[in-house]
Image (cartoon, rainbow, N blue to C red; front, side, top):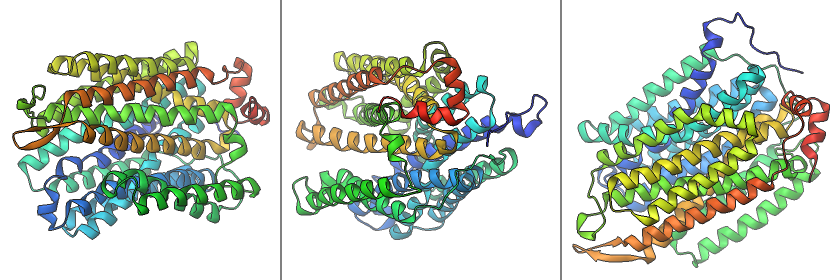
Length: 489
């Protein structure tokens, strides 16, 4: 069924659809970020070990990675608005549970519930494609995709301020209130899309993908603590390979697969997924390394000894940059094509890391380098969903964008593990503590910059956009659209 654009005389609810969906995306990123300032103190506050506390991050990562493609497929089949409200409800419920308890086991379970919010962005992008006229879709999708960076930049200073001046539970009450507001606004402003993908939900495929992703991401996230050569980590990697191989075979044989691998393996879809993984790696290294570097003790010779609040304020401009530049990136994609925008974004990220390698001692240089990386991230993240939307039928947009967000998540997880491994191997004693050396940080910047350049090369290998007539057909998911999507495999 072909979706109808919002009428010109639409009411207030329809006019607020884009801001409401963007607010939900920002809340998702804020919710995933706010726990970071608490991590050093939570072992004492919850009477638990640092290893147990680390699961507050790992649980959200795992559940988000598993549920994003699953909820995306469910949205395509049963209604994107309905599944979006479920994701927002789980985010709000998880926040309330976190606010009510100090038991580490319940906190981990609540954070796993919050991980479902990762599906908000791909579901919202799919809703925007269905509901907006073509001339508004590009800018709205660019804004929606950028909310990940905007929310991450806002979450850290917000959480740091609350933790510094109030009880730590107040932070979760704040996210619970904001999440409930986002849910209420979505109920009011977002209408259900008539576009559906017929068929039966692939429960076995969902369970198989969940098992494979848990093995993979658990090994990546815990490898530094358990030892990369330890039996549990090697077993998890081996299990991931076996389970995902069996899942791939099962998906190819399924009449109604969770992920259409024949479509996903075409160059127009597969290469944006690969670029998403690489861009996620390059993006995450920016905020991860910057936060550690500026908080390093001044005795290290490079550190600025900033507080967590000051660190959050240093990262705040990156979110503003993503908000301001998202419409710019949309205009570039409209004029030159999203492939060019994606490649340009990767180049900007590499340039930003080059600035960081040249000088990471002065605060203004650090902020300039981080801002350039954020500029590249805005271009890359806004172009990726546009590429997916142009390459898949309209009834598969939520699941396809869910896979793309999953690839970003995997890239961020690998980035975290790789940066941690680099910094652990390059340390020196400062005031009785082992801290990373400046050379270690520069090596991490070089690694992230190199990955960004590889992302640029992959982006340029994506087939050129179809002719305008074919592009319009693809945007509306007509029969020829799927044929266009399958070209170049």
